[in-house]
Amino acid sequence: MFADNRFGYLDKVRFGLGFITAPVYWVADTPARISFWIDDVFVSRADLIGENESLREELLLSQRQLQLLESLASENNRLRALQDSSASIKGEVLPAEIINISPDPFSKRILINKGARDGVFVGQALLDANGLMGQVEEVLPFTSWVLLITDSHHVTPVQVNRNGERALARGSRTTTSELELEFVTQTQDIIAGDLLVSSGMGQVYPKDYPVAIVMSVFVDPGQPYVRIRANPVAQIDSTRNVMLVFDDPEEEISSQPVLNLNAQGDGNVSTENAPVVLDVQPEVTDPAEVEPQTYDATDQDRVSPPVEPPQSDTDPGITQR
Amino acid sequence: MQPRAQGYWVILLTFFIAYLLAIVPFPEWAMSYRPEWVPLVLIYWVMALPYRIGIGSAWVVGLILDILEGSILGLNALALVALAYITLSLHRRLRMFSTFQQSGLIIALVGLNLMICHWLQLATSQTVSSSLLFLSAAITSAFMWPFLFSILRQLRRSFRVK
Image (cartoon, rainbow over all chains, first blue to last red; front, side, top):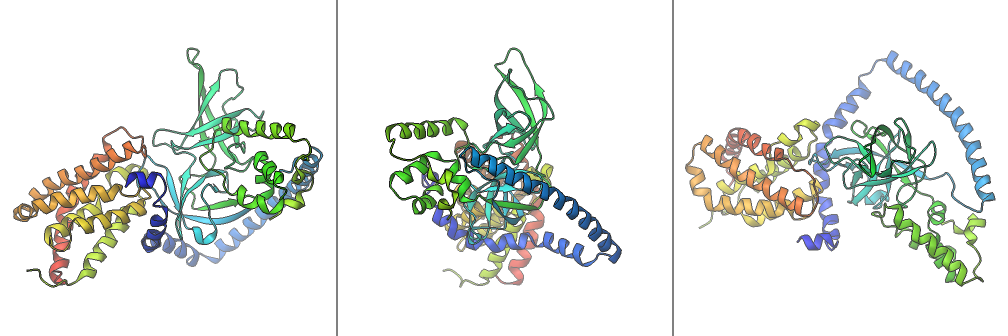
């Protein structure tokens, strides 16, 4: 029974049983929905007007920031184009709602109300309005389980926003929602108050989303590594509204030099890429696993000089799905 | 001779409600004290209708609970099958007991159920907990048993579930 499950033979059974269990979740979520509905219905006009005004102001402010951001993004893309790299700041999101949490207090997982029907896939990144929350672990027909970044089995590749120092953030082994940075040497420059953003290594999470803020750095001269605790910026315990990120294919391809080159070696550029790229392993969260691939890429360049350097990098139009 | 099956929907309904209570989110501190509703309801039905609800039904009930909790498939199924087997072999004695004596036995039964779940979770590295706090659910379950027992017996009698 367990061996079956470990090797994934029973995934279909799970998926089928997911149809049966959907109504239970639906009913269990009813009180929350009713309370939201009551909030919506019984609200005074003055409150609505006030809320409307504040929202409008907020919209104005964020639109101004968006304008700045767009010019920055286009500038960034131009600079990247100069460097022959096609990573761009894009990506679509799908709004979702958290409808349940794991009954085991030691496993930090949540259930969201989007499933296979909505195109959710295993390994997809989940955000809330403030930052990264986790990745999809199991997809059921109408719902999916998400492993949070604070789970002790989950490691997020991060980098310090201030200076680009890379680290691995593992979920705390206690019941608190904290992250611990692992294998940070005493010479690395990380101080309390630093913002950690996702580094994009491991190819699960998109790059540059805020993950956590460093709370405390404990240096024990007798130990090889520093103990660093960080607080996730996403409202992991309180939010209900979350977003699922769909990476644009361009970005995924550019972060996977090996697959890209293989596809070109077959002489087939655009059609081969899409199915290959979707085979990203969600468990690969260790930067060490990323390194060999780049070596492969350079090796392949060396042994086969006639193959041009990645075309998709110079001409992003080719790789669009 | 078995009586004709009657009022199956009552049994299904009670399990449905037990599932609901099992997955409704609680505040963090109360999570460990949540009574194990599904095992309790299962014990009752095995005790009351041992010719109708047995090890097979326990397995199905456990599988659905596994899916609901998102745990490894077969975890609760195995624990509930063990629970159903013990309850089946004890059901005549259980019926003779007073409610409070039953509660005492419930601590042992639900505790065993929790232990099996916890061992399997540790063995498959699903959890990292090392405290015995999870056993407190057995005590809250035992507290809930007298109420649950009287409610379910009322239901069974008024709908003539056989």
